Amino acid sequence: MSDTLLPEKAIQEALAELPGWRLEAGRLHREYRCNGWRAAVLLFDGIAHLAEAAWHHPDVTVSWGRVAVSLTTHSAGGITRKDLELAAEIERLATWQPAPGAALEGAPEEGCWRYREPE
Image 1 (cartoon, helix red, strand yellow):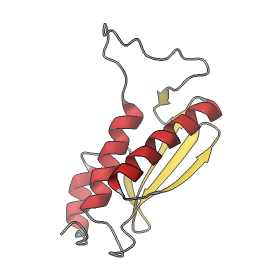
Image 2: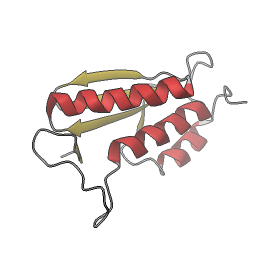
Image 3: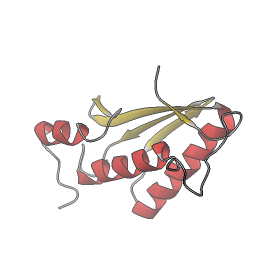
């Protein structure tokens, strides 16, 4: 069931709930910008953890201040629920910040992890 290909209409509806994700060359794709190399590697490590836990592995490109993620279910030859569910988990991880006034302060701007909205 989870390896069943989704019709494009279902994919587009799901993408409406995943800001920044898009359909590109038959894959779900998203780029994240962050503060430098260390932040990009930290994000990659989090994505790698989620992928291993889910046993569903995206293609990821890491460069200075940028992490690009592409998802497809290779065994099914396209996009399945697995891809959408992992995309949602990656999105939560990558964009999470402590709530204002929370005990968790959040990282300072300089030199630490901080997701940046695309310009």
